[in-house]
Image 1 (cartoon, rainbow, N blue to C red):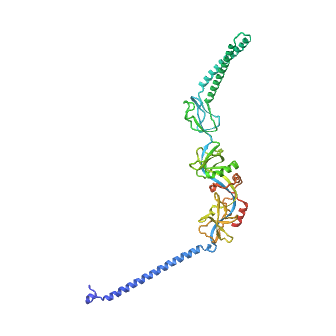
Image 2 (tube, rainbow, N blue to C red; image 1 turned 90 degrees about the horizontal axis):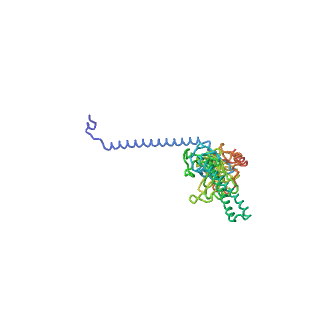
Length: 454
């Protein structure tokens, strides 16, 4: 089959072909341009729709400002606490030794048993020492008779000397014989006392109140006097102590408070620092600084009536150095940090925030003392401060706390416990868990806070 060109014998015109290609190219360019315009219109419409939805969603806050949570600067008692790691150490750990040699006959305790001072522990075979005691008692009877005979002879010699019937030398010799006999009697009595002491040593008793450990010698064994391993270990548990270290920079403050009050409260917590184990008081401070660690060792004593503290147990120690009464405080969440130091966002009367640089004091749990930069009753932002800046308008949420404390007023018992400390410069302040610290609200700060948040 042939084309028209082939049948007619004519060739296509090159200019006609070029015009067709130009028209086809223009048509495609127009189609692409229209598609680009349609796509741009769709994108613009989508962006406008998203912006409109966002404005509708946040429309209720548009005129009111960013919602924030606030607290009021109030007065509380703030504790100055040193947090350290300590080791439970018994006040007495005694390795019971045998004072004499002999066969161990009886064990009078169960391993792990609580004993009192003087309770029976072990019995060593006393028979050899009873026999020796009987021998020395018999020897004493003999020697006392010799002594009496010598005294009788001496008295007779004195009578003969008065009659010049005997030489004076004989009388003098008899005097020395009497003294020798008296010395022999004294030796016998000392030997008897020694054997009685050995018999007492055969009956081994507990030297202290405490708990007996695992026995190291079984009945039937022959024990030596002052053996190297001992018989059993008795550990005093009530009372018990905790040894801990304090940085040398904090020692002067601790010593000043310790000398002034005579007693600094100490609380022991478990390894996780969540469960309170016991409460006690500071008992002793070491006399020198450890040059390798720059710390000073201290000892706190605990009654340990419930046995919560166990020897060589690791505990977290909180030493209450002092209580700062009626300090201006804010929640820790209100403190912000910038290049110029710590600051807070304070609310003005028209709910406009302003930046205030503050000077921080002691932190006690979730409260931080403010020594400068804030006044009693000031409202500060505690929540929602991430996107704030000075001069911004805000809305106070209705669930904002009324005061600077999250837990309310502390119980009277807690107030008395904290009131045992005395003021000082606050050096060495530590932080404690929020659930373990309580604070005393003052009526003035609480009333002002309530009125302002409402």
